[in-house]
Image 1 (cartoon, one colour):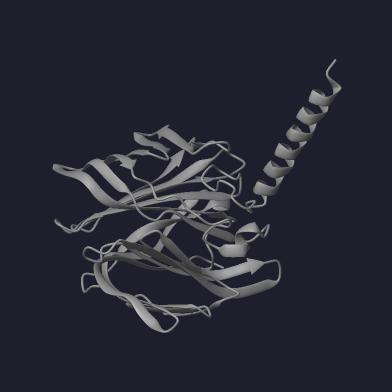
Image 2 (cartoon, rainbow, N blue to C red; image 1 turned 45 degrees about the vertical axis):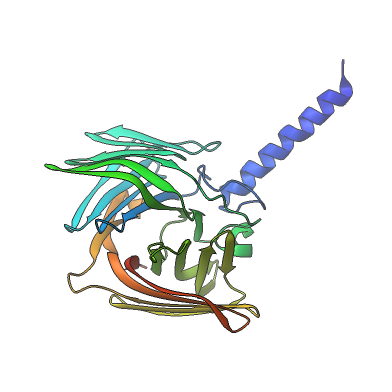
Length: 333
């Protein structure tokens, strides 16, 4: 009998089990893979693509929400222009814990998602897309910085695709949109559910500039500790700036305007966002324990966002996007 090989195998298996238990708390090890399900109360996946030439924007989202009666999904598709939102609570969702795979087929609603493909059908609206040219996240910790490794937070956030291309079709009623290499952004959020309040934004249409940015903030809770926090991530070419607490990040947001300032000793990022007169789309928010969605997520799919990035006080990027996502939301406390 090979005792050395048996011992090494046992140690490796024990390590995998410990890593799995650690992920169940919501936290990730450095250089871990946040894309598969952690097994927390709510696991969310989000896609956003835009085509500046046509002014079209597509948002799709789905989740795996845990409940004693069985896992279920909050799923939605939102389109601009047109003000379209289709959403559903879909029973029987299956999210893999070892690889990125989310699937559901119930009541005429379909979810089939992986790292490089998304097919979602909700009523009269369907998304059928393939993805390529992913920009790989380069840092040891996720979008939340060091907080990505802290167990039992109420919410975790990771913008895992700060660039890439989406091709395929989106249909709604008798409309059919075709996309070829539309700009793509993807993110993950997971934990005990959405915070009591939050704010968020994303943009990548700044003319010819190779930039993709996102910010996310909300009431962070860990036991009796409660604090509003905001994080900012900006990809400029091959450089990714992530500014999260304990760095200085301030935010002032309401349903019409967003102002975020994030700074380190070297970098400063200032974001000024504004909604549009036609108002935001209203997206669903899951209440996992109640097995239902509430419509309290207000998101502009094509707002205005002005971004300024400075390094050592010198402006290295400044631009404005007219196809920015800007969001605020809340849930019952």
